[in-house]
Length: 266
Image (cartoon, rainbow, N blue to C red; front, top):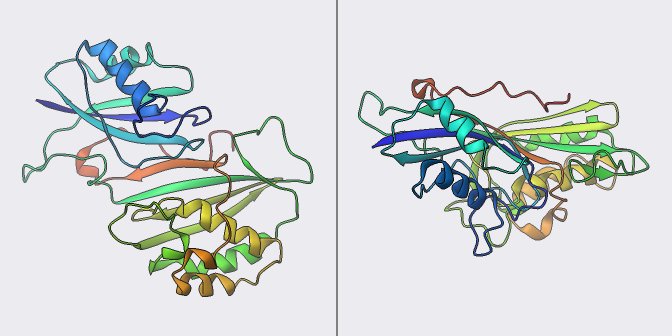
């Protein structure tokens, strides 16, 4: 049995998230349909992290096991032939067990995950960025948001930013980085952590926007974090601008991952 890893990129608009659902209108459903058409046998995939409806992925990583012996590039071209244009396999790799005999796992082998949230900050919406970026018409102060974001760095209980239906075993996560960069009218929030809770990024971005508009002071972010209550934070922000960007793995797995830029068009 061979373990194959895939790097999958998708636009989440129109899909009901990544994870399989009964109506089969998810990224995982369509990916596994394409895999079965190419391999002529059902293949079950395991992903690095689920994404919600409307959320995009620059690089989602999945793995599956198969008895088929085919070159890595044939998995890329063969599976893409059966996928819609909004879902693309970017790379494939055969992943061997490590020196201790441990198998690679798309989810459990991950060291950290990175998300980008793209926000269009302009008095009027953009047709070109519709469903590809969030939108705030009020002016945003990036420096105030950066000051607020500093309170999130480190190991914390992120219950205040956790969706009620979150199934994570613990709300304690290690936040490695929260950076905010402005490119003209586009603001890119980059968050890197050991793992994320359901809606965690969107809830954090919503709270940072409260700070950026002057509704709350930067120190309020610390109060929200310490409250450990979802009621303390801002409402969940729209999914449109959220991108699952990068999963970090030990180099021993030799995955042909692509360098993660803030966004392909920046």
